[in-house]
Length: 390
Image (cartoon, rainbow, N blue to C red; front, side):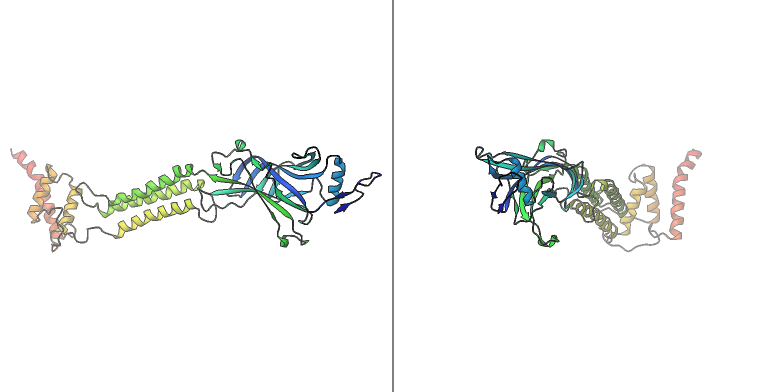
């Protein structure tokens, strides 16, 4: 390409170059804060540098170079666009530099376009693996020149960096990319342009790994303990037998209510999104597991179907008269059972026997109730009468 008469000097300036221009891009991220993975936004303070290496010889004046770039459509304030900016804090500051080339300082010059950005940017954050997710903070840029005239390239001599010491969320996220910013160059889709042009683009990315210690300590471990405490309903009593259905249901329902309450308590710490995260799946599975234990305790009567009525009577005696083998209550109950003709059954006796509804406490008849009341009255009044007579 030949550009003539780019200045008002008496002697025309003639410039020859081979297009496209190669912009070496470098981004310095000074600070990254307010990362909101639910609202899909984050704030950043960054400095973008676009360098044209060896743009001219050392004896060429700066105004000539700038006039040449202006003729190509490269203006200092409108050469680049930040694609994912939601709101700009202040204004985008821009400047330019005309400096000596680092490798050929005596013969060649470089031209740099510099932009300082403080803004709120949007991102595409996926939380399926929360709280062990990785999020990519990306700042995409695009040149206002088609790819036939300019391209973006990664500056490998001076790579993009991130000042990790200024990172305000180091207790929440670990910077997986360290001090570097990953840069990748590509081109826009032709269908995105109304002029059917393809523009050079570049993504600058910082990868953040969430620190899941808080969620493990305050959610995962308590939910796990609540879930496994539901198995207490399958414990044995002091005599080595399975506790009755009522007590098992009481333990199970208590664990279910505890799980529901804790789920509401930790709801604020879990992202409010439309799909389930890994932590949501775990909490929901634990809740369903506790509910399944409750259902099992309600419908599976462990060892009760083949027990005799004498065994049921023995359980009732144990609940009603805790000291059935000693003390006044135990002697009274023993005398009452002998008078009714009921033999005390052993706890290990589980064979089926015919049920005598006449004397069964579970199925009492009017005649049996009369005998029980009469026996109790005599057992209580007998000692008192003997004391009075004496």
